[in-house]
Image (cartoon, rainbow, N blue to C red; front, side, top):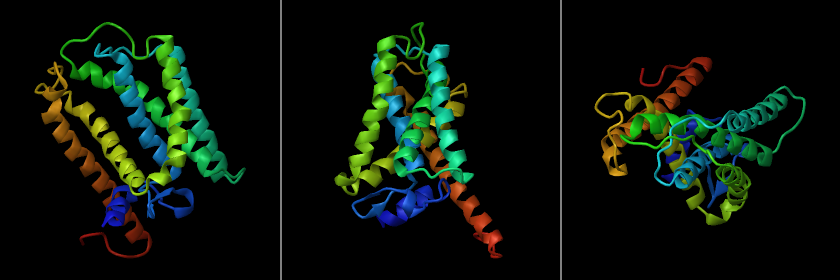
Length: 232
């Protein structure tokens, strides 16, 4: 049952090759090492950005030099992936994981300001990661998260279930952005519990997007193999 759920969750998002994936408690994670890094990195970074903000809801984008760090993370992942697929070099699951983590952290530099600017009724002036110590803490969390994930298989089945939760949380956060553009939800929240109606819809939308990605992949596979579309 757990394996079926994990496979369904990651089917439309990842190739799910065992050799490029981690395992926990005998269960393969729903996505590969690189994608694991992306989703977990996104969630860890969002939580960390919320922690250092201390309830101020600063919504201005980070300073250009901080965004440049995010661009470096993106370039690092692109270099690792492109050179591997081009056959120029062989990468490892450790490199896949760390480059995925970098991208996951980088994405939040854009997502967090968008969410805060559309979510909170009141906010203080200021940038995300406005202080140098915040940037240092944020950067330091990347290798720490890598080490935790690298040794996480000792946690057994908790590991794949945690990654599954990170995938759902990531899709929920992304789905929440357009929902907060609706007048019913835009800049209405004063406390976190004010967000629950929009959050519930975002969870449904996120799961729907995951299911749609899985159906689309199955449809493509069926067409390539000369089969029929799912449900046809």
